[in-house]
Length: 162
Image (cartoon, rainbow, N blue to C red; front, side):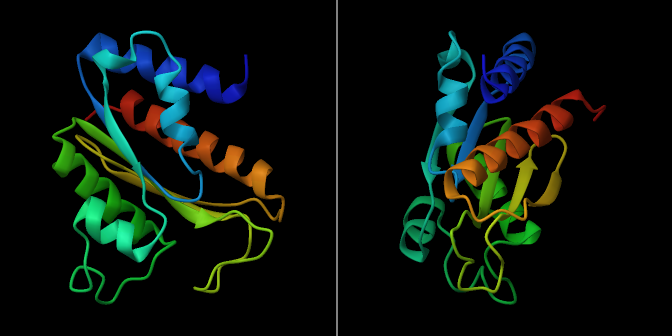
């Protein structure tokens, strides 16, 4: 079992036990977080849905985040990740939401972040955000690391007292 699968099983167990739900908005992980959660048997009890929000157009269409909401904010930040988490939670009426935004590599993004940079956020009864810098330009390895960090943060949020 991979570390990603193990984390997803722990998250799923908590969500099922608490009869809570999750929605996902991810970018540079390309659906890995949603896939890990959906791979757990019984996912229909907790998984509402998810979206790969990779462009400005998809951000507007899928999350309803336009230029007005982006005033004073740029993608690939904790504030932006939290905004995306809040919006996908609201749109899907989920108890919790997890968002990820970053630069997988091999080069950085147009906002000045180096490859290996991601921000993840959880919105729900407890909100948290975190930044990860892997220092690597290896795209696939970064995707896995970003997905693990997102699920770690979600598990941390689910474990905390609210």
